[in-house]
Length: 241
Picture 1: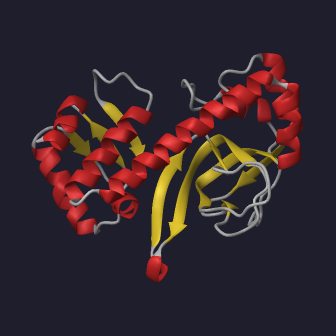
Picture 2 (picture 1 turned 180 degrees about the vertical axis):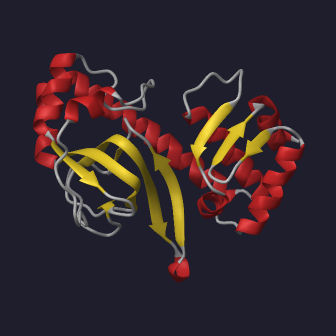
């Protein structure tokens, strides 16, 4: 499924321990050591290089890839060959939803941004783990709920009439997903104007103008590949004004 030069990771334990924690989002978070060891033994550890696909839209699906380190972007091939960025996923997340069992094809692609280490759990492995580990089954269901909410938010964002409204809604959701203290500045990590434009179906020029306004108001601080939301409450207020 588009692995190219993917190869096995030599130190799975270290990668897994470094995965961030968050309620209902990270599939390995709620597992005790016996269940976690079982999952790690069951899956296949692989490495993906920059721009390498973990899975491709339209290809037959076979399980999920749990990200142990690095960043993965989900993309969809839109009309006239235009690629739409749906979301970015970090260590602890998985890609391969919405259908993780049964005969289906991927609805979108997942591509590495930089070097990525992942644990591949094929459908047979998932079925075994669901039967052997109730904790894993519950965690998987919670993660699917989180992903469903994320893509529902994206659909609502794209339905907005104005680019500014779509962008603000997206930034608010990214802040909520960042699992940080909302009372202080929230770093959104590696994010670019081009990616934001692809996520909401707008031009980069319009994104730049909106971000400049938010920065002039002190709501955000932007850099070449990093954005910090200084005041989430003020950002949320932009939606209602």
